[in-house]
Image 1 (cartoon, rainbow, N blue to C red):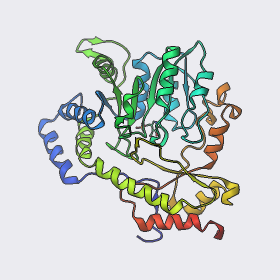
Image 2 (image 1 turned 180 degrees about the vertical axis):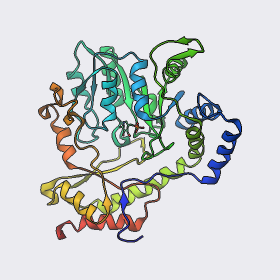
Image 3 (image 1 turned 30 degrees about the horizontal axis):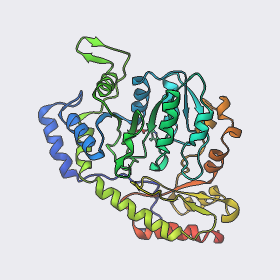
Length: 374
Ligand SMILES: Cc1ncc(COP(=O)(O)O)c(C=O)c1O
C-alpha cells in the first residue's frame, strides 16, 4: 500500500456480495421489506444462538435500542453512568427525561468503579447504566450486588462487547438488559443496527411492542413507542455476516497481538492488560500516553500520525460530561471525575480491523517508536 493512502481507525468488514445477493433476490420476490419479516425473525434467533443468550430484539441502531431499553424498564429519576463513553450512552437518558449522574472510572479497565457507584446513590436513583468500554468487561458481579442491595436495575451499554465472554458465558447475560450496536464501525455490523438482549419472554414482547410504535396488536397501542425496527435488508445482511464473524474476530486478534508485541517496550505508552477468563472480540486498540515519560503529548502523537495519513481517534475525548448539555450537572465537575479526565487526555485508539495488514501496523508502530525524531 502506498505511503499516502489514508489508514482510518477502522474499516468495515463486508461479507461476500454474491451471498447477500441471494437474500436480496428473495426480498425482491417476497416484497417484504420490514415489520418483523422472515429475515428479521431468523436473524433474532440465529443471533441469540450465536451469542449464547436467551432473547434478542434487533433494532435500526444502537441508540434507539438504548432509548427503548430505559423505556421498557420504566426507568425514571437518576441513573448512574460513566462519562467515558460515546455520547449516545448519556443521550439515551436525556431522551427519557432522566438525570445522568456521572461517576469516575477505574484506570485499569476504564469502566465504572463499583465503590463510586455506591457512593453516588440517592433516593432518586433507579438504575445503573455502565458501559463495557472497548469490550472490556465491567465488574459485573460487584455491580449486580450493589443493584440487588439498593433495588436498582442494570442496563449495560454493550455496544463494544459483541462476542465477549466471561468464562465461556456471554457478557450479555449480566444485568437486566444489554444493548449492542451493529454500526458499520463495530466488530459485527449490519451497516446500521443494534439490539437489546433480555432474559425472559415477557420483556422481549414489551421491547418488540415499543420498537413498533407501541403496537401490541392491530388495534392496541400500549405506550408511546417509537419506530426502531430493523428492516429486512439489514437483517439479511446480518445473517450473511454471522457466517463470517468468527473469522473477523480471529483476524482482529492477530492485529491486536502484533501491536502488543511491537509496542510492548515503548516507554510512556500503556496498553490495557487482558483479564483472565475473558474471550475478547478486539473491537478497539486503545493506547494511553503519559506525556512526560513518552516525551510527547497524546495530541502531538495524534497529529504526527495524521501527517503520515494515519487517522487514529481519541475515544473518548472529550468526556460526555464536558458537553454543553451535561456540563452544568454537579456530577459533571472534573473534580468528581479525575481519572476519566486524565485518561481522556491520554487515550489514542490505533487502527484495528480484520484486513489491516502487517506492513501498515509496522508503519504505525515505527512512527510511534521513532517519536523522538519529530
Ligand atoms: C458505547 C456506545 N454506545 C452507543 C453507541 C451508539 O450506537 P449506534 O451508532 O448503533 O446508534 C455507540 C456507537 O456508535 C457506542 O460506541
